[in-house]
Image 1: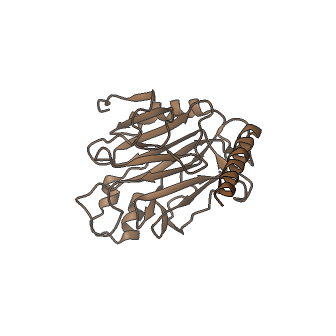
Image 2 (image 1 turned 120 degrees about the vertical axis):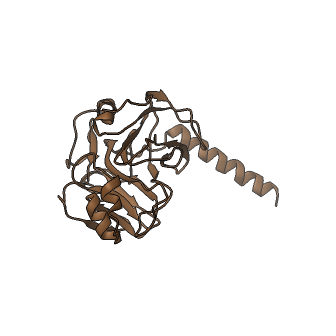
Image 3 (image 1 turned 60 degrees about the vertical axis):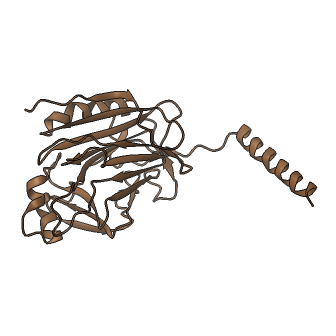
Length: 274
């Protein structure tokens, strides 16, 4: 097993790019083998909470949800955008500026994109066999949350979100940007890189008391997977782990009174200007 780089587990986030200050605990790791990051992935699972709620309807008071893309075995599956296959059973929906999403073993990526050099089978090794996940025609994946069992009718928030990434070669490119339920950015956080092929990286965000996430924008590498690109940093995802989706909190009575007071003040100023 290779020597592991310095890890930052449960450190307060300092690399905020924009938006309001958000204090996330960061779980970050990378290595040459899946075993190199497993301890950090499991620490994140424990911090988020047990049990794995699988396909049970929510909202549940404890636990987490996971998506590993392996339910289709070795079959390659293309889904248009948005991809809502896990919206009702796990509470996550996926969108992209590209044409859709692909779930496939690495060899299936080569077949789908028509690569004659077998590149993706050589640089990607699944964390959990057999399939990985990637947007098609874009490097952007937007994840939004819903109450499991609501068929997408009840938007939700989560307190934690983490993802495993494969073959992150360059630092400060592959990232996760978190947003609150109002669409305000809570910061952009970079996935740790590890040189070489068939490498593994993990990044997990865990919010403190009162801190929650309404959407996550994931950027995987600097060029989308295709038939010919080679001198780039192409990245795909594997397992996703997130806390049990909860209902979006209703505005407090004090907040509603504040909004009403602002409206009255605005109306009076407008009337006095007439």
